[in-house]
Length: 243
Ligand code: GLP
Image 1 (cartoon, rainbow, N blue to C red):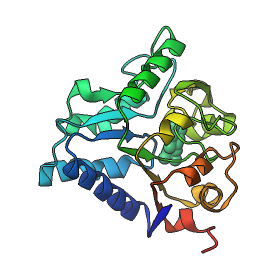
Image 2 (cartoon, rainbow, N blue to C red):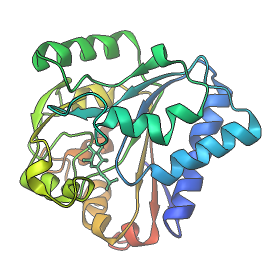
Image 3 (tube, rainbow, N blue to C red):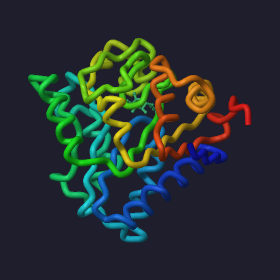
Image 4 (spheres, rainbow, N blue to C red):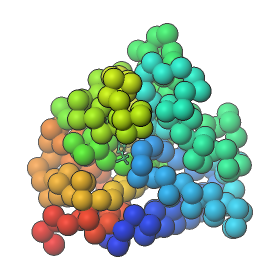
């Protein structure tokens, strides 16, 4: 595991944006796995700025998002579909038909999840971006999720619902309780993984991820088994690491 330690959120965003934009320039047909949450917001802004300044081309890039809430109507401001369009896709030249986000407004969530998994089996992800939940989740694979897991309908833990209430007027009752998420097995098939984390509230899980046991109770610890993982973490997130 390669660990890049940087000063703060801004530096984390710059380092991660550099890795992604260089990967896109190196392989204009890259399959990107993308993530939502607060962590990548600034990084996406920098990718947009890079697209405008350096003409990094996304027209042959395919993107596959990690997860989506279940039960929010299409166009709801808090769907990850909306998040991705507002933060990135609307501002670069990626083609709409090359954008894949699980459909959270489906009538048959299980079938939708199975179709998404099939899509991922046909399109290996070259570079998968991950954030990390304060409980160690990746995508929406909460503690206890199987390391072999495929894309599936998942329940969100109370901790995740509390953490994400900030995007829903601070009201936990408005946060969906289920999502469709790539499984840990699906995530682990990516050729390369880039995980970003910032802030003291991530320090404990970052320590567990880097130095702890590989255990399903800390989903991100599975990354110790992946051959090509880069962490970009800021000082606060790295503060509990022993070296
Ligand atoms: C969300 C997402 C994850 C994200 C995580 C951390 O619930 N499903 O993909 O990595 O929580 O979010 P943040 O970056 O806002 O801390």
